[in-house]
Figure 1: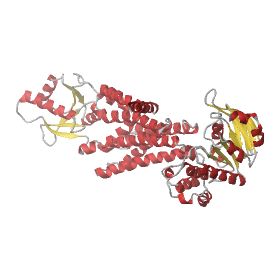
Figure 2: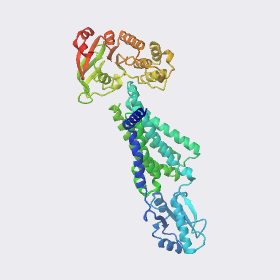
Figure 3: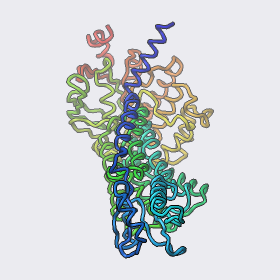
Figure 4: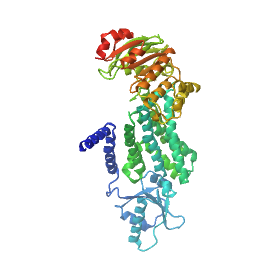
Length: 342
Length: 226
């Protein structure tokens, strides 16, 4: 009995080796290790709060004095105006901007990306401590916190969920379906009819795009939220779903079986999802993430959904998504013509 | 000639595949392609069906170059050894899908269902059918566009006696209807009963090409099944 169990277990391991499942098992810990190393380690430099102060605003002298005295913990960037501060904030070069509070003259308003973030808590705590040390029990310097991303945690996380949907269809569902049609010789059966290869590819693209758009539409219906620039948003989703559907079809062509496609899909899915979604919590990830195609979808998504941005200032992202999608489509067509692994 | 094959070759590695091969096939011939496993039989049929691309050579089918896939698929129907159908859909769905893609009138689906005795199974999912029935659906699908040339890769492999006889009946009726048929086989009785011409492949080369009486009197037959 034991012999049979061992034989079967070895057979299963051999299958896992053959269909590359074993790669997945090795890849996930490796990915987690690399990702954790990319996250900023707590040291004096990275632990510093980076605050933007406006040159033209007359800050109370005790504030500037206290901030200067705490230069080990608070780094100051002087900006010309609030607009420049917002720009640096969006680029994650500073954690917040201190400006005058119109509602309560004499006190300050803190401008941050998200109210519910570790950076915001750190800024408020630090300034509260500085104020207590300088003035004792007086009203807090920061009397208001304004967030660039309005709408609470549900809306804040929407770009991440949408990216997950796009990548799930692109990297998990489509490669498996393409590989299945190859594995079962269904694609070859279809090519026994007068259809053109491009027609089959376009049909697969449409499938991917319909799946993605349906899922996103359903998500919006459930969350009861619509972006301000609806046309821009729809166009971005169409470009993103085109790019990642074409990408997924290409991955499917690289695999002989569904099992291989699943493994390859996960290997592509995780890196494309995490750096984009986690970029905000790490300076290092912020610098690495733009190299991933998913970032060119995630950034405009954030801008349109959370900052009421429009497509006019996202030309690079659009061109990138459309060019990458077209390249993947062309490569899939080449592999199909060559009957690659069919 | 309906099929003109010149120096057709495909090598997977140094030994396997098909060495440069030339032969011609006249309209209405029923050719059995015989040989050991790995002799190149399936490779030859798959190249003629556009499933795999040849390394070299030319094939002309009914005056159309094999490279013109969209046109040549109307001339050739290929039935692989393992039925390749959309398992989770019904027999009728499968036939209608391929009829639409081939721009064949849907009436033809009814004819195929009737001719291949598939009417009781038209709504059955393919995955619920036996291999013999699946093979019948597969042959029916290949005949939807009424191609003049049929290629069958071991059509009776894994079938029971009854189903095998049914496939023989279908092959004979297609031959009587004037189709040109090439099929691969390991079964001597199948070759004897069906073929009008026999080709033997060995290590990727044609070592015999003649009539069934010539073949069964030759040493090749004895060596092949020794």
